[in-house]
Length: 381
DNA sequence: GATCCACGGGAATACACGGATG
DNA sequence: CATCCGTGTATTCCCGTGGATC
Image (cartoon, rainbow, N blue to C red):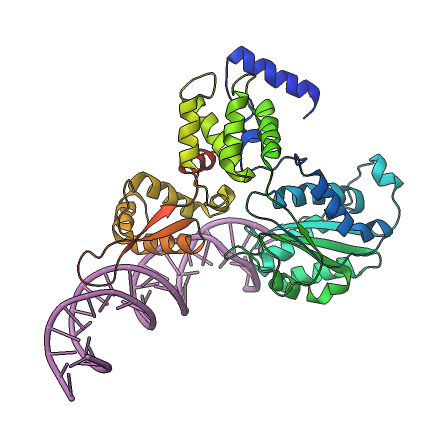
């Protein structure tokens, strides 16, 4: 966004008296194109990738940090920038950095394990970064796609660095699986494993991210509010309160900010009040999962989640919840039940044991491990 | 026609508990 | 007393089908 655009948004915000200037910039599911407050981490990542600058491939690297510590934010930003410089997408963009460069082509491929879960999807995602031809979505075999990837990488002076993000979450592409899929081109590819922990029996270099410190969280929140909200829409004290509450978890801080802003906006108030902040912090579970985990689900699961939120005031057995959801949707209770168990396996829901009501096995209930208000708002888009 | 894979439903299995059995 | 059994529930698992795309 250039300066004119910023000013225009600010102006329209004042004219319309609107609180939300840029909803997307406030979204906890969207990474900033340039991470705030992670300069030293970026440097350490570049250190680990140093051989690239000499036209070599570095050894496999792990990037690990606790939830909300910015691992994804750092890697997505870094890979986008590096791919601009070292990749060769075939696009005719004559940036100065590009024309100065000589030497081998190195693509920086970012794979989001939450959305890329099958071999077919993996090859497809990799190819779309590496090649500028359009990659079919179906109607073509997985072997065919692998063949295209291999032939592209086997050419001299062509190689790739593949980041596999969220490799240690349930049902995502595991790191070992990616290694298998890359087996036939392993000499031309190196990997970056991004997650909350290193892959099993890891003995390569690791870039460890610490949780954000308080003032860093304040900077992140201030950056988002200055662009996303009308001027003066939030007190600096409120930002500090959010940062304190989030205890280093940037996702939780941003989610609560987003919820508070949404509440104030819906109430047609020009600024975020104390009550909005309180409600927001209560709505975002501190030990929950990233909101993007819910957003990466298929639409029918999201629908079931929405129904669950509207149905379950107090914790009821899964069987009853499923029956109520059945009446609002087109699927049977049996299918809803299975979805709810699956969502619990994905850690999106938490199973809560209930007291036995009679004979038979003890029922359990499910509760969201994400912010309901943020989910409703983000899914509606 | 080929291919991927999301969908959906119900079958199969696991568990809890009380009561019968050895 | 220890174990088995039957019944009722909860949970997991499997697999055929069809939409979308090429």
